[in-house]
Amino acid sequence: TFAAGVGGGISFTGKYNSGGAFADLAFISGIKENATDGDYAGALVLGTRPNGSGGGSMERLRITSGGNVGIGTTSPATPLEVSGTSAQIRVIDSAVDMRVLPLAGGQAGIFGTASNHSLVLWTNSTERARIDSSGNLGIGSSSPQAVLHVERNQAAESGIFINNPNAGGYVAVRFGNSDRGTNGDHLVYGGTV
Image 1 (cartoon, rainbow, N blue to C red):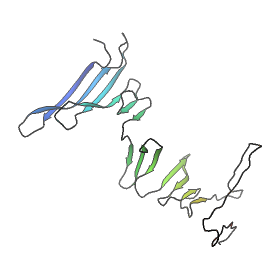
Image 2: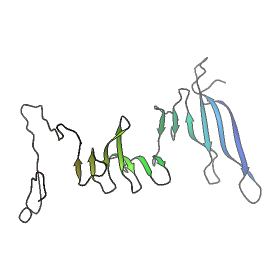
Image 3: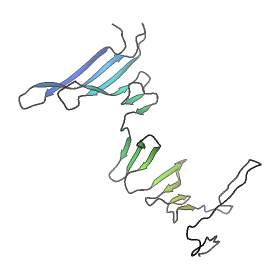
Image 4: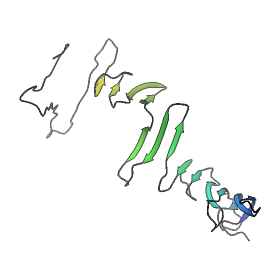
């Protein structure tokens, strides 16, 4: 038959207990991707078996006829798609641990380091911004000295541009301090308070 999901494969078995009983442990299959007559589109499926006596091996990864790779999904829409209730991508070397994952509750996405390291943003293979492990943000600085540190070493204007193109609006820069009575607010140029 040329039904979708049908094809050939290899099943891997092994002994799973001291009594010498065998069980299916994993599989690799090549399957027809659709039920269209004369359509050659195929997918490669890899599966493993979870612990427990019930059931068998389950699909874990699929490479579609278009080359997309899906982990936790049978229909990846991008070159790499990871899906599931605890889905995340982890890139780690001997020290730096990077993660991409959704925030629990579906409120936001997270991209950053899970280790005590900075997060650096590049363009054109050059560092442009850095959030250090203490939370300071440096734009043009690889060692930010404050919550926001903007720096550019050039013989021209270096600053922050804030614009509101709406004729009915305005631009405001606000300084706030909950301890106004003692410390107040300060705008400092070329020195320290």
